[in-house]
View 1 (cartoon, rainbow, N blue to C red):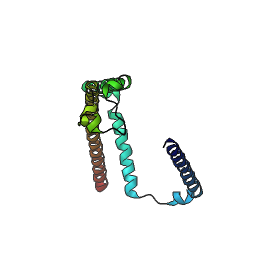
View 2: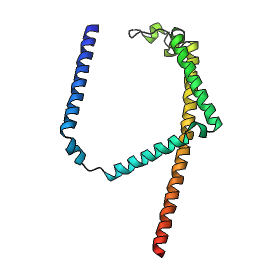
View 3: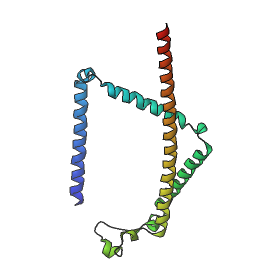
Amino acid sequence: GAIASAVAAGVMFYFTLTAAAAVKRTLKRSKDAINDIPLDKAVQEATVEAKLRRTVYERVTVWHDVPKHMKYILIMAKFSMTLCCYLLFIFNDKCFREYDLMYTIGEHLGGKWINIILPLGRVVLLLFIISYTLLFSFEYWATAKTTAELKSIHEDETKQLLANTEVSNYA
């Protein structure tokens, strides 16, 4: 079993390297042909919009510009996740029951899959959920703030275009 798995892993690794080398050779040989392929206008516009969104997101989430309550949320999320990880690594055997591939739920866990989680494991899972919820709330705030900034930017561009159009019509 173990020898067959090791051989299979070695074969898969070899084929992965071979495929990567073939792709690299093809890209080298066909570089000019690939570069001559015209880029789709919608893709270019989406790329520009994604870069703008990323830039605005980075600007909105600069630490000294983030409101104090959002900083508190991030700090608590980090603290919760750090504590969760420490508890898992240090007290792993006190968080979850040992369970092997050949075990059955009926025989080794008393018929309930939830019995794999020990009391400290419930604390760890709760810390993980708290951390994830706090991080999600920060991401939600940051995304909403980014969207508002983008909307403001687009409105300003529209006003600028209208102003330029009006000037050109009167000239």
